[in-house]
Amino acid sequence: MALVDKHKIMNGPWHALSLLCAVEMPIPKDLATVAFCEVQSTQEIHEKVLKEAVGFMMYHTITLTREALEKFRVLRVILGTAACNIPAAAVEETAHSTICHILNLYWRNTLEQIPVREVASGAARIRGETLGLISFGLRAKAFGFSVVFYDPYLQGGIERFLGMQRVCMPQDLLFQSDCISLLCNLNEHNHLLINDFTIKQMRQGAFLVNTARGGLVDKKALAQILKEGRIRGTAFHMHKSEPFSFAQGALKDAPDLICTPHTAWYSEQASLEMREAVVTEIRRIPESLRNCVNKEFFVISAPWSVIDQQAMHPKLNSATYRHPPGIVAMEGIIPGGIPVTHNLPTVPIKHGDNQEHPNEQ
Image (cartoon, rainbow, N blue to C red; front, side):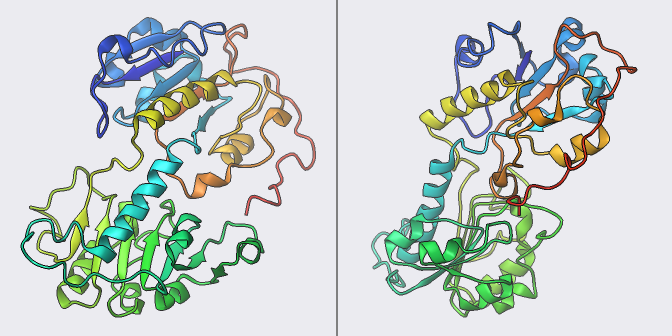
């Protein structure tokens, strides 16, 4: 198994070289030899590692192209490669950061930190305000918000159990909410969800918070609406192009804007938890692909000759749609004792094995 990393983790802490893999290496040591590679790209990885590595773990600062992937001899086999995430890591940190952005917009603490001699004019009370969530969350209700949410992937009826209001269309949420918080992942269906048309459906004087993905918002449309005073303010944690700079881009002259670096996931505890979780996910192979995010393509396109398809976790991880992955784990699914070949016999697929689980939606 290969661990690939730069010495500096973007938007994270500096670690001494001896500590970079101290968390990861002990977990799979009884199953595999672990090779740590301190490199800037996959082109610098030693030939022996490329030839023998069955598992491959990297931080998001390393780019993995198709050409780079083909250099890994074991991972080139037609059985395919499973991509897994670790959805439970840094959930608390990200949720708390989102709440901080919402509170800062209402209380204007950040916006008033420079003119400290002036009264924090424009601060608003939260009780009675409606918070609209694109996705789902529970923390805001404790602050006095009336919560409305839109989440097409969440099981029906949960809103009744929790005493929350659910809408069927995002436009309904925009119209009802005093503050809108984007929490969803980015896909082809919600790209530029907040655009020149939808942003005009927001309430006059509403807030917008984006701690999800930069591609969800058309920043030119947002900048124009901020300059016109149609909404009271916006807070961004994620940007389409990072690192973000106030000196350039559509938002450079926009008023009432809070922008923070991509660090909502980080705490010392979350960093260690994430590193342990990603190696544990690799160690679980081949018994289970519990957090596999490309399962449907993997099963359809690849003949499974080594691992029984029933070893797959029966549910596609629901967090795939909503939570941004931290570290990417990529595993070759062929155990070291099995010779690599393009002519391995296939296991017949049982009728019904590839059906969607009823709770996936």
